[in-house]
Length: 150
Image: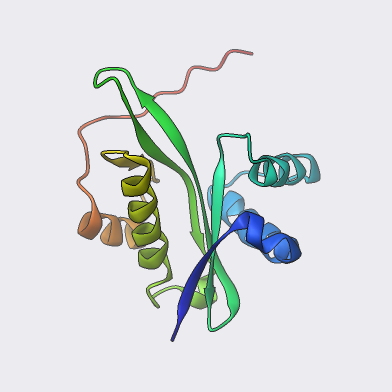
């Protein structure tokens, strides 16, 4: 089966499918999607001046997954690396190499931008995704902390 990766800006007519995928991602992490969030993220993705970039995966011509990423400064190296904020594959398409194609595309993008690496976070209990991540990346020693400011 053919899997194509397209920039979100090329997929403006696929907004409903993107929204379904993004909502699936948000729900997977037990968060609530709202129209305000969806509209804001979509606007960011279509704004060529915004740091957030996105791609959609199409399997057999059908929207199957998405990835949102951005440049991230790495002060200790005086350079930029990539940061993968969101990666999601529709459950119907899981196990068919869609996520691997999205990660391969992101690696190519990183090389073209001169990023030496790409980092991301995932849930500790996201075993299916982690099995793929263990094949394409190295797990670091860091733990994530979040300080609420409001």
